[in-house]
Length: 188
Image 1 (tube, rainbow, N blue to C red):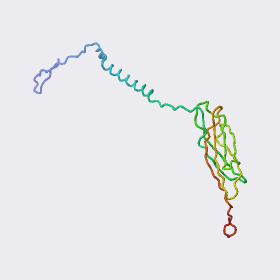
Image 2 (image 1 turned 135 degrees about the vertical axis):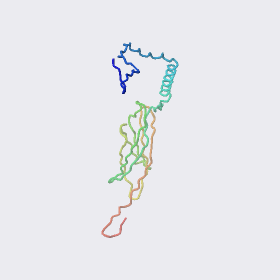
Image 3 (image 1 turned 30 degrees about the horizontal axis):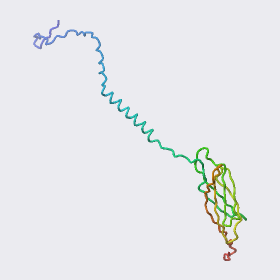
């Protein structure tokens, strides 16, 4: 045993005695068990899930855009004409669009008509339904004169009446061509 001495050589008693410390072996602590499920929380989660599903189904079914019903037959629309003088004739290019229709509503052919005001020079042409333009030729008017007419297109369906879509046009042939010759004034 050790005794501590003070500076005067007087023995001093220790305040605390430390013995060797041995730890007891203890069993590991059991993990905490989770609390039982809260039925009220699960009811709230289930109700929110059902609400979200109901809104999704309602939005899918109720807000789907309705397709408008297509007509049974396609028709010719937006007929336009381009009139150009080429050499000794008038070239008339007639173009058109076809409306949308059911799969069986495509026309068999397109009837193209160019009618002038004196009806003698009128022309008729038939084109397949996959073409959207046709070119027809007329005699040009005399210089300084005009010719008026109408271009029409109609989709032909078996057993159906023709519905023509027409556009008017007019062409005025110039009197003469002005030419410049070495500083001379223009002549008509």
